[in-house]
Length: 216
Length: 331
Image (cartoon, rainbow over all chains, first blue to last red):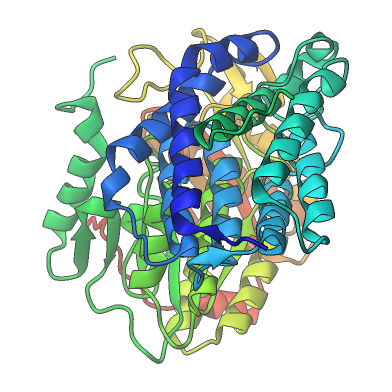
């Protein structure tokens, strides 16, 4: 099976940063429906620094690169999103500190470690209507593929993206139980969770950057 | 609000520089990460004890660095948790073969950043453990915490652990000691005014003349209730009942009693409160073995005070009496 290289991880992170910057207002507007309308601004403030410092990051391994990204996110993304997103990158990075390429099953383990970290840091669980409700089914999709020896990473990426897209509609009627959104209780019903939308938008943009059509 | 500052964003760094300039022989200042540490630390045969939280609570924690107290402190902006990379850098700089003890006041932002920094340092093979202080009896959950807040009682955890570390206690013994102190210390505060961080142009909450916030947090978070101002004795009685009744403290206990000013209340008023607290201790059969009246953990210029009681035993009395030196001196 084809391994995933550092350059591809870099490309994905660069794409994630571009998504955060381009959607600053959109993500904040989504947050305004039931939260405190700062999600997009918080996220963008961190990814702005990633963009500005892009050439400076340690690229000695996939893990070291992700650990540096996690430091910037934790420091510069405002509110609780900083430590939560930063923990995700940190836990993933710790598993790849000595790796210049990773297999699909290693990617799945990194995503699992990120999910565990996010759960631990923020205290959310599946069903609380947070980004975890996008990441968990994505992880399961990748896991199913990783078990097969002949999976094409492009196909896996596409499927994970579709799963994230589905998570937006699937969780829309739910009541948010964590984070700012939860303070408004029933008001969060019927509005998409900004964290889930952000994950899905990032996944779609990563696909596009690799020339993969996720819509079909 | 009239304040002494230059540019709001320079307020914390310039305060730190001032603390360093006043103690050039004792302290090292790392401007890049807001770290103030003892110049003669770390050493290889002693656990390093460090803390970091938002600024605005001085002398906690940045001015509590010194022999027998903290080895280093790393503050964030005013009322903002220190960033994760600064916490991580502080752990790395204070790394000792005996380990590093991180003391954290129970606020969500502080916990998240420190937890990450500790994890990262551990992944690099550094021996580091953290301990969370939650002595505030006012509320179970606040806008910034899950569970009780960490307030002025943290001074006793620092003092006890700082003294024990100097005597060669191991990291696991220090965690045990911190657990004991935190388990026997209780606090509650009352605010008579609000406060204004330099970067803001209005107070962080509104409170009118003749009002008080009972059970206020050290960032002005709401407490138990808003009420009309009462007499000093009545206010102290409410604090005392809440604090003494929580552990509960019992007849015959030897205690340390702290009346902590929140930043804008003069010593004279603190001693008016102490007078009543001493009377209440006597009535309750508590012996005040040590007393602390002054500013230990503040909220900028907020008028108000908190009461802290710590149940003592021989070990704690000795540790509290052990010599210590910090950046703030009055003699």
